[in-house]
Length: 385
Image (cartoon, rainbow, N blue to C red):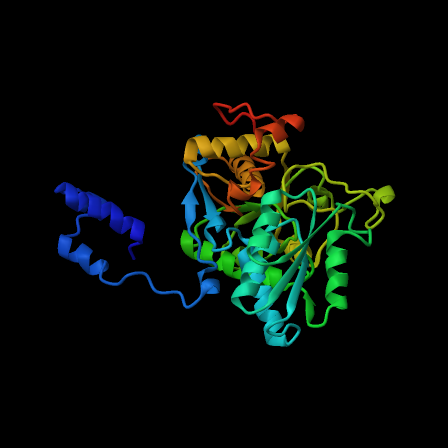
């Protein structure tokens, strides 16, 4: 089926009066091409029907550098701008169906930003309200987007999940204290994982089941859990890799089976342990969603902030892809996997969101300078170790 951008390209060829029609569409006649254009794209009955079915994009620069085919699932094309649209829709639809949430009720969530944006969009579309609690070190663009969608925004200082005033714990309390309140609980709600079984099915369909590896970072764990379960069930010998940012313990969990030493047992840390400028990925506890992923993850890599920053600049310069911090880290992971497997393999990762909601931090040169992460705009990929 032709997409509109295909039609536009062919229309230019017609206007030029050349035989490029045959080059563009494999020698089809004008009549045959026009018959394919007879039906415009279907009309979505509402905003939430635009969620999902995102395309895979070949990341040309990484593919050519490694001899692999490296694809990113363009989740920034969802209507709310990120992969979290899928999770928000699944959580809200399941809650409405089960009676945990009623139309007109208020959805509460603690999030570093993107899930809140998606929940606020889905809430508005399905007749609910949204209250988001987020750490005050999250990019300001995310708070502004939340407010633009009509959500109530509560910014709090970042602390460990063991602290009663962690943003997730505050959101849970707010829901309990509010009539008609529902705590969406993205970290522990397995609707998150279930949403990405469909993402995995899309990747399987788009690659024809011919892929060798999937790689992604984890925050809640829902994305890597749902996708890896579907792919491992349907693709023989596919391998799944985790890419983990600084300050996160999931690399140790995958490689060594433990999160902490005995001194740093789960729930004992009282300060925020993270040491990364990436947002929405990395965690120092086991969530129900990540536990769904554990049986399917074959190995893990560690990434650095420097690698993510340079990768983001590389993708803009070489591919015209303007992505956020987690997407950049995922592409670091894809490159590491390609080097491990060698040429001739097909690798898929996730482009979680665009760079537009990271302008004040991850894509801000002054901020990066303060963090000693000023990009060098490298001319090769040696910045990934």
